[in-house]
Image (cartoon, rainbow, N blue to C red; front, side):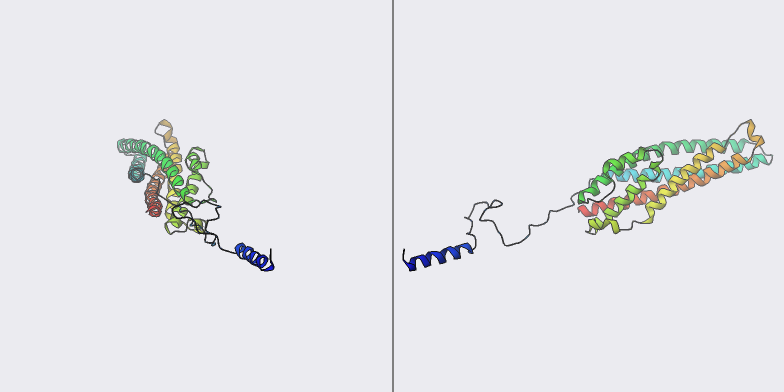
Length: 267
């Protein structure tokens, strides 16, 4: 080989080493790692998160209606408890006990209705909380605290169910609100509205007060020796049922708002 030929071959090998990759044949797919792949440094498009909300709209509306019905029943029972208290006071002052007994029986009937509606509301909240937690998890958030399983199971843990469902609801509210604004990963810094917090506190505190109040009310022969117990009981039942009714109405508003925020992301 002559010096000229050797020099041409050496230069050709150096230029080939830095030459751009050949173009892919038209109509042929370019697999990953192929010499025909694009190595220009452009990043692949990010995976799309979000999607459709998995919260059932019918369930949400039914839950809101049930919460409002429970609120009305509780407030009505509170009014009847107040009437029973007035009848008790009248009987204590020497009047007939007919008005007291009638008001007390009406209060008991209203409280039984409240118990039935409240049980249905409990089941609805368990299912809705599970669906909402599963729906907000679609945003790919890895640092959230509560899973869909916990969202449903925490309702059945004694004493813990006085707090954990609220924590689940507040976390879902924060995620849904930031996701509706296109920033789901910023949920930790979001501040949920006070509606759900006040509603939960009113419902829990009111239910406990009403339960305690019923244990202080008794209509039997021993009532004549202690008038403070029934009087205190009626006061607790009245305040407790009224508070639970107000709290239930606030929770109905919170349920509607969180569901709307969650569905905003899917549109």
